View (cartoon, rainbow, N blue to C red):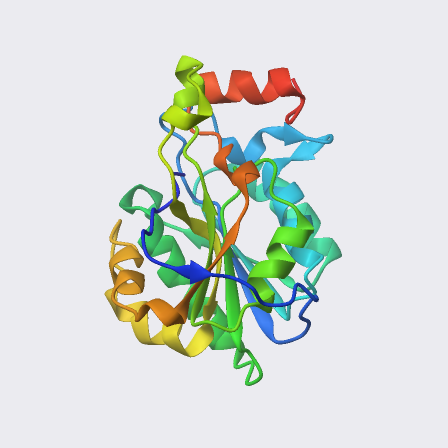
Length: 240
């Protein structure tokens, strides 16, 4: 699924010491990968599907719970994540019956599931996709270490790579997923998350000092098209 672009933010300078037991994770993995032509959740990295690779990565942050939102009627995706969830009680699976409606509906389902846990100590929610193939634990740790209402990732667009353009020609300053957000704020916004209407406009409405960012150009490399997939395999970022 495509990342949402946010254009405001302040530099993130907080400590990157790992936070523990005060956050949950929502992994948005119900996209239909229509541009790619095959489920990106099942692309393989280091011998396992991306959906399980990213869930294991989320587990390294020591969250209270991980909610993985998947599309309905896709047995291979369900089978891959169910096998992992059986190993880790922290991992909860939520099926999106209307994946075609977009990211906002998946996010709404994720928030609803977290609220049902009644975890009173939750401070922040880490929101991730599954297709940023170079995402790593230090970046997630840095997001969670931020104190602003929203701490988002900042990176270049890699659209230019499809045309083999120079980095200087690429769009700059995409600010989006993964991000960490104050749980109370996320709950407050839940009712406004409808269909493909995400929370980009809601974040833009925050004062600048409430938005932090963590720079990481490795996050430019998400997988939305066959050309991007070919490039990632050629680089050795994904298994062939």
